[in-house]
Image 1 (cartoon, helix red, strand yellow):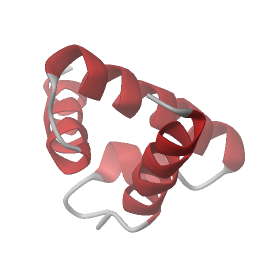
Image 2: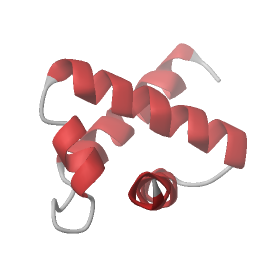
Image 3: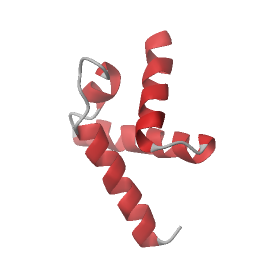
Image 4: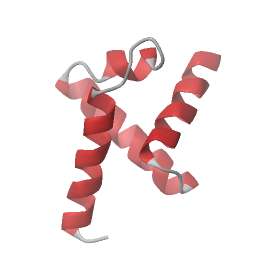
Length: 70
């Protein structure tokens, strides 16, 4: 990936994280409320996307499910 593509991906992930419905995605909604949490959530989601070749929202939904399961 080029630097521009990476920046676009980061922007897309952050946008999605900041617009999540807390009732559906409580873990990531809470995490994304401050800068450090948003950075952590972004890294987690991008890592999951790279490992599993899924979209942003698929990664968020699958990770949210894993966190809910404990």
